Length: 236
Length: 236
Image 1 (cartoon, rainbow over the protein chains, first blue to last red):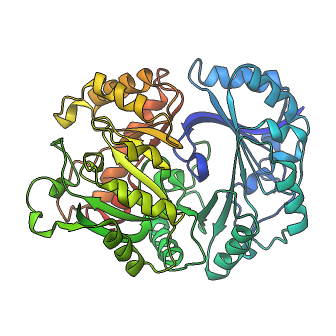
Image 2 (cartoon, rainbow over the protein chains, first blue to last red):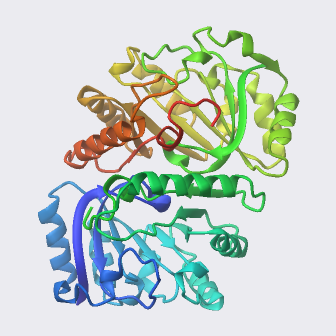
C-alpha cells in the first residue's frame, strides 16, 4: 500500500526542469530528512497524519481519473521522499501501461529499481541551510544507480551565499547532469504579505549572484512559479 | 556582415524551453513579420535603425568575450527573425568551434542550413492576434528542414481565447515537438503600473484555460520571467 497525502491536478509543475508542464500530483507521506525550510513538512511532522490514506496503485489511478478524466498524460510523484516507498513500483508500472509519463523528485538518498522507469527524475540534494547532512557517497551511489533514467536533473534550493557554495559542490561533482538552482522560500505560513514581491526580489538576487560567478556556466536559475502565483496554498 | 542591434548578458533566458538558463543574447535587426504586439519592434520599425551595427562573426564573438570573459557557454540569437540572415552561418560555426551552445528563436518562415547546427531551436508560429498570416505550408517545410536539430520546441504566445484555438492547431499539427504556450504581454511601454501583477493574473487565466481543456495534454504553460522581474526594460 502507498501512503498518500494528496492527489491533485491538473495543474502546472511550478519548478525545476519540467517547469510549466501540465501534470497531476501524487504526494506521498514520509521523509528521511527534516529540512528546516521544508515547504511540505506536513508530509513528515505528524500535523496531517490523520489525512494519510493507504492506497493501492489502482486506487491512486482511479482517483487521478476521477479528478481529470481524459485530461492528463503526466503524473508527478512528490513527497516527502517518494523514493522511500518500495510499493510505488506498482503505480509506476500501471502508469507506464497507460502511456502516462512520470516525474519524481527525491533528495537522492534511497534507491528503488522503479526509479529507473521514471521519465523525469529530479534529484535535489540539500545545501547547509537545510540543517541536513547530505552524504556525498550516498548521492554518488544514487546517481550511479539511476543512469538509465530518460531525463535526469539536479536541483538545489538556495537561500544564501553559503548555499551557493554548496550548489557549486553538487554542480562540479556531476557536471554532465543538467543543473537547476532554485530560490528558497523562507516564509511558509498560509498567508504572507508581499510574498510575491519578496520571492521575486530574492530571485533577482540569485540571478545576479550566479550571473557574476564564472564557476557556474551550464546552469538554470528558476523561481517556484506556483509560490509566486499562489503563495503557500496547498494542493495547487 | 551580421546586422546586430544588441549584445548583452550574461542573463537568464526568460521564456520557452530553455527558461532560466544562463545565456548571452545577440539580437539581430530585421523581420519579415510585423506582429501587432511584438515586444522587439525596434528591430524592424526603424526606431533604432541608427543603432544597427554590421559586424563580422569575430567582432560579435569578441564583444561577447568583453562582456563576460570566461563567463558564458550558451548564446541565444534572437531578433527580429535571425533566420533571415544567411551570414549568421559564420557566427554559428565560430561558436561551435569554441564549444559554446547556441539557441535560436524564429517564427519558422525562412530556412538556412546553419539552423541545423543550433542546439536549442524555438519555433514560434503566430496566433491571429498578431495580425500576421502564418502559412502552414511554409511552416511544414521549415519543420521538415530542421529535423536534425538537437532540441526543438514550439512556442505560441497567447493573448485570448481565439489564440488558444490557434495554439491548438499548431500543437495538433506537430504533436511530437515539445509544446510551450506563453502568456502575452499587451503593455509594451517602458514603465507600466502593476505590470507584474497584471501579467501574473493573465498567466493564471492561461493556466486555468489550458488545465480545463483536455485537447491540450503534452504541454507547458509559461510566463516571461524577465518581464515579470524587469517589465519592458531592454537589454536584460
